[in-house]
Length: 442
Image 1 (cartoon, rainbow, N blue to C red):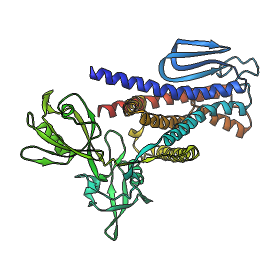
Image 2 (cartoon, helix red, strand yellow; image 1 turned 90 degrees about the horizontal axis):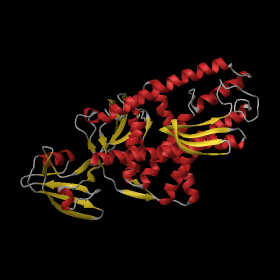
Image 3 (cartoon, rainbow, N blue to C red; image 1 turned 135 degrees about the vertical axis):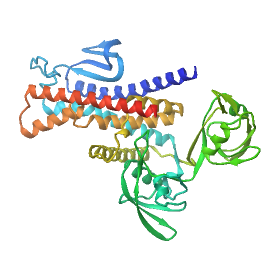
Image 4 (cartoon, one colour; image 1 turned 30 degrees about the vertical axis):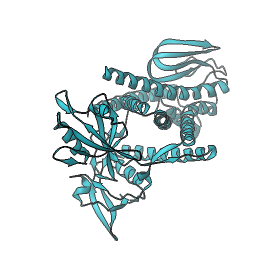
């Protein structure tokens, strides 16, 4: 029953997030077309057979069966349409009009991302303190690339692959986009500066680079199910400081998990931090599915002390524009590295991953969900601007070529370009869905 509920919540969250993104995107195309007096025959959320909808004026507003996209169908839009030469036909309009319609969809997604993020900054967002701290090593994973080159607790990372890093956020991004690459790292130990060559590893599930260093870590309770922990008063968000049995005491997350699974029926004393309070809870693991468990999820993560960032309306908009600009620059950096093979294709995500993250974001509350929606909206806007036939960027690219050569491409050539683009898009979607399945299984 719990699995069915979780799956239903994930599907609902996915349809909600994707539905809003698609609605806003197609609304941009529709509004611009109507503003320019181009006839819009269909405004559809989803593909395939029409489920329900209504007609207003010339436009059929509908919801279709397959909720993985949407479209606006304009009069005289397809290259094989028999054009009558009427001014309400898309292909008979000047290039500037067609360009405006093509740009309007991605532009609406980007504006939505800016608006949502500005709203988050006005409401107040919790930001982990460690992200803005200097990248001083507080934990080194055993047998990791960092361990192999001798990085130690107390070292401060100065440069990664020739790029200066000033904060943990800088360092994490710099490593993440360079999976399985041999790079140079500069770091400071006491007052001396060292340089080392290190071969980064690739995260099996995400494809991101892995160095193996972290800021101060904590064992955080991420979920509490009915069971011994819930009965003892353990709550989501509690930071586990230590767990003690009759004959041992452990602090590391992996050791805590081992102690739980080897202590059936034996009381364990959990010392947890909850806000400013330090509490002690006695929990007795019970056998479930053949393994002693207490009914919690525990994740080893950086100490999540946070600060609240909250701004007025104008500052929120400015902050949102800056953040979206940074994310856009990072996106194009990753795209460039994908094309050159410097970054793993596993970093690409498709509908399954989006669905999984939608459900997780929705479960964490409105702020997390809206932040996630802003990120997805921005990525959707950027993706649709790529010069791939079938996408808006393909239309923009063809209009640009026609403007440069000062004549229209032949209809046959345009049809071939669109067919090739459609095939490439199908191959891309097949790959990212396979990628999603691989990561989900992993």
